Image (cartoon, rainbow, N blue to C red; front, side, top):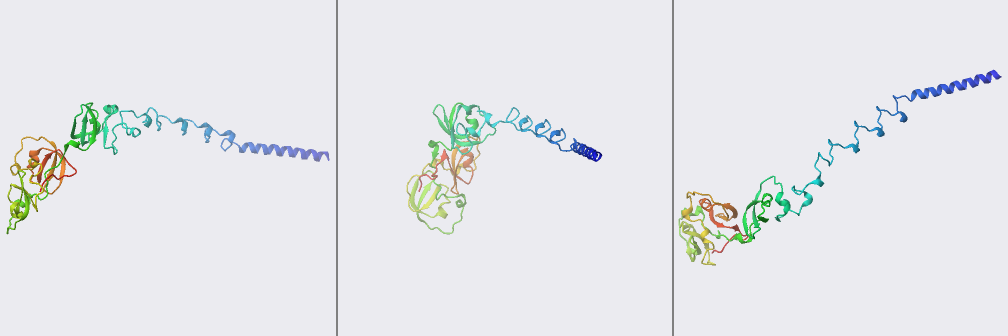
Length: 283
């Protein structure tokens, strides 16, 4: 009986030893054992230089540091969206008062616009100017898009003007009707006229049916005279002017009168800017 008991006890001890040995063989470095996570296994606690670590963003990764642009460090000499309002703003502002920051602003393009320029001595003038580089001039206090109010002009009316095509028209009949006839010298008369025939007279500027509202044509000196057509101009001296065409359109341009009036499609050239009401006193 004692022999049998001893034999059972021996077998139990041997089985326990054998099971423990098999468990240790299973948990080897080649398998996942949390206590043995080594260099070949992903271990968050061992994120080294070869692993992506947000805490180690260096100079080669976007980091608002020395090697990268930091929006919060944009200085006064550069356009910063966070500084809209303090100086020149290219997005929608119609004008600007030149600030101390504008004096040293870096300008990367030259885009002249028709503007009213205010100088520090109180003078104003209309001219084409780049707003960014213009404010670098310490003699300029402000720049506003568009013409200065005092430079707006009312050019001679182009209503009823005799066009180049009508000058040489062949008319088979003469049928005069009550009209307001304005001449190149600016005088207007109430008379009967036939437009087809009378527009062949180079001294007549316009013919409108009815009666004259005024006997003087506004700004008659601005009308391009017959003698100015096709002449040779020896200089090009551009001036801000309101150029009106025989097709009825008027636009503000920087032009030389001699060269512009030599064009057959131009009716008049008035020094200044075209007013919103582009028609002066006429018939």
